[in-house]
Length: 296
Image (cartoon, rainbow, N blue to C red; front, side, top):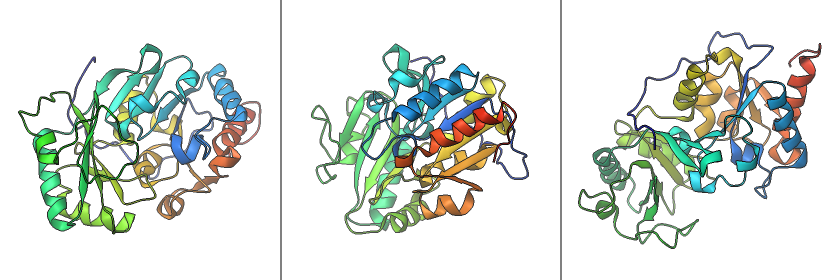
């Protein structure tokens, strides 16, 4: 792991910025966006990603997934090999065994404060902890994608100083059995928003909590700045609330036709659904525009 940093300043938003006709970087979410519902990358999308890289346009995968779930796209990272994972909490090198290059952790004390505040505001909540080394969860936490090597214990024990787990916390996850997803998000943000960044990407009441100020946008902005790429030179794609900051930051942003209503409402450009290769369709249009067409 090369570096561990704290929360960064919020990136400048896209308000009043003029989109670039010749983008230098494409930033795309995975689930519900680049990937089809069966979690595959279509042949058309594979070809579009390769064509973009061949044309000198970098492609960054920017996802809520942990590094260990990136094998589905690891063959398509092309030149730089990097991906932004865990909603901006980590940058990993997929060409080097998903090695952590940069980490923006959620502090242990802040994670505990979130647990206590959310539990008080929404009784019945259960929690899981995503660290750089693995995933641990409470006994009541729903069996989504559970790791057989995980520690199962109350969140207070998982987050205790003497827990034996010293690796950085990438995100805390909170689940509720009865509340609606957006209702749970609103309640949790109101109760504990001062301790972390709250978002969601699941159709269920499953929240993802990162370090304060950490989002897909904050880490993408850092990666672009390191490459001398301005927001106006970035085209971003997404479908869920955890994509909102990134879509707002990028000079040109596309919501998938299957996106959450909030994403569709605030994103100027829309493309067809993930199952219809909406990202590939726009990339093809971008490459065509470079030969004399217009970017719509």
